[in-house]
Image 1 (cartoon, rainbow over the protein chains, first blue to last red):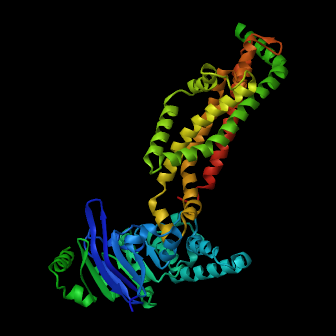
Image 2 (image 1 turned 60 degrees about the vertical axis):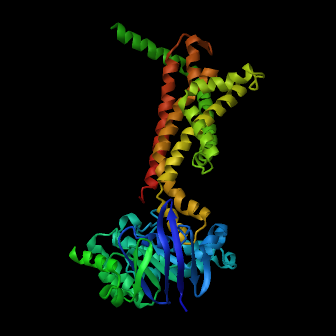
Image 3 (image 1 turned 135 degrees about the vertical axis):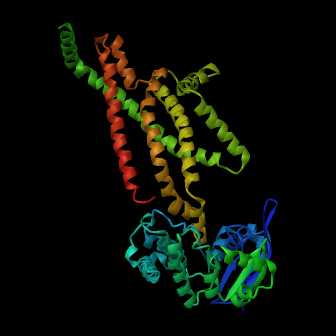
Length: 261
Length: 237
């Protein structure tokens, strides 16, 4: 059974149809990379699935069960949407770390706030927080930032900031982790450290969807590639199929152009 | 030599009259301080409400608040003081009465309204200046709107508004002197009273000049305080 399935996702801004019905599905533990030229709707798709935009129509299934029918999104209470939201994690292109919090606090803030809703919070606050801190430190260690635990974001390099933001998303243990062009805001020499982290997450079988322009990386890390153009997934399949033997002319033209550059 | 003689005479007068003038000015400055504090206590929260109004998605509300801000910022505070104090008497009943207390309340209302409108624009800039990505990051991390505001946005907003706010608050210290137009007995009023006659002293202008010391000292303290707050918030960008 697919962990995530998206059917007929549509979104328009005014008269511009950005998504014209996107369909795809993925299995647990898989890595799916979304490629395509700028303006093809990759980021909008990500934002719709993470509820940052309200899709006009389309359905999202999690573990085979309907998570959201976009037509209902406006009727669903904020509390319900939050619950749905927590199935997914999102790593932004420009990090969006909370500047007033240290690395550790950035990672623990959301889990600590969530812990308040647990029935045993009043009696076990200390234990809950300790558990959250321990977990956060382990995650921060796994992205190699233990020595920056008490630093503030303004003291970090772009690559370090992005690693904190990955740790922050991981701390909530999302079912699917999304990346929106995670290396686009970084200097070329810093992209490597992010790609390395994503590779290690793939090795741990974390389910991920990555919007990226790094075709070589996408080819090597992904189980599946989704090629988008004009708001439609015009080709999808294994990296071998999509990148080595594209059936669609537009995919071929896109890849050719990249090679020429 | 006549110049030195004049100085000596003036210093002598000041030393002689100071024990009488000083308590009178202190009393006036207490009134200045009261007006300053009450204006802040009223205008800081009211300004936030007005800023939410001006950002409201419901058009009539944002239109009304923007017109209010335009009227208040577009006319002199001195005029607003006079209108608020004299208009009720003109159109029916003088709700302020004739006493010092009525004048004080009228002055407070004029100052709170005026400063709330200025503050609202500062708040608006502060709120809109926090990148929308901060709110989105909070949302995808499962925070409620309230949590995002209090845990993420608020401190960043405060950091942004401290410099323009301190500017405005220091202006307020000196603007309180406008209240003497409706005969509120603040420090300038107390100082200028000695030009005619007050506490048995006649025809002296030095007490009026001396009131400047109060403003300088108070603004100095505020400058230090705001500098401290800015330094406290300088650990993040």
